[in-house]
Length: 170
Image 1 (spheres, helix red, strand yellow):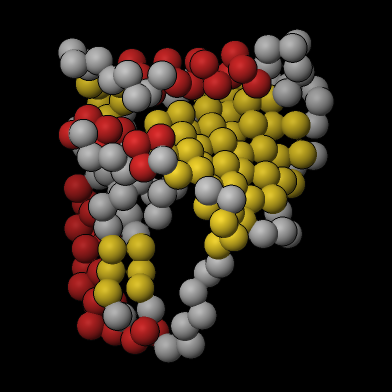
Image 2 (cartoon, one colour):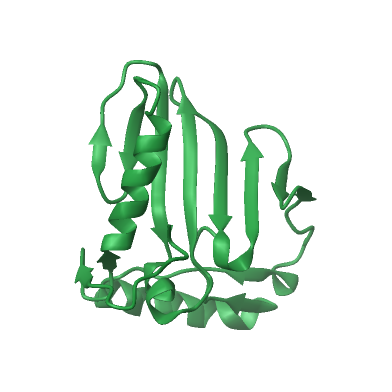
């Protein structure tokens, strides 16, 4: 669905002028919800675009149907669909699919996580000066200014900072 991006995509703002939402965000969420509840499931759903649907099964799906909407708008391939599931309130499983990057990450709580079926691990860095930090920034200008100040303080103490991909891809 998302790879078939229409040329005339209409962009709206959510919390601020830099916080975009499109019909593709909403269509992706609608498709995910229909798929997850197709067989009459009584699961709860929390979607970024559509709000919350109550359920009675003890299963709650948490959806970001298009993380990295601004990247998507600019044709930058770092955007993804993110789906997590809680069972009886406990995070159980999650998957992030970045179709344009041809990558799927998934993991089960307490077990290994994978990228395209290869195990992934966190880095083993013992000193802050060797750390590579991936981060993102808020949408409101005042918050971004504060975050920029924090980054300015951290940068001399780290190996480097990366920012450019969707949060779920990072």
